[in-house]
Image (cartoon, rainbow, N blue to C red; front, side):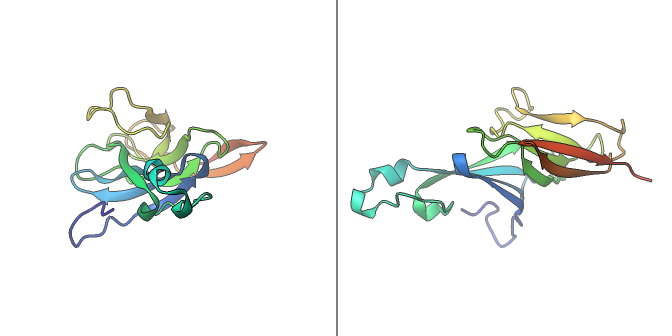
Length: 165
């Protein structure tokens, strides 16, 4: 699938796979949104319709050749062509049936902050009904909060904030 048709690359970065749902989360550039958060999900609908002797019973590849796929914009956090520039995408719980993710992004009003998403695609262009929101604006205003360290501790993700000096 060509995310950004034409000669310009969508330049996908920060690719993170949730194996239980066959979903890949990543940051990519696509007009008119700029760099935003996307998901790519492999559906097994076509795979199940194939004759048994041609099926791949233990399919782990997210290649579109292995079935149908869905590409979704998770949220247009920074509305307009600038994009929110999502970085450091991390699964909240790799064993959950439905993935949720943490990442850093900017909405154009606040600086770079920690966000969370339920991984579901955007419902409407105004962000209503969205499962994506900021965790906390540590430095209110347009200043970025700094960097986060993501670590897994006792099956939960822990975030350590590194204050800027």
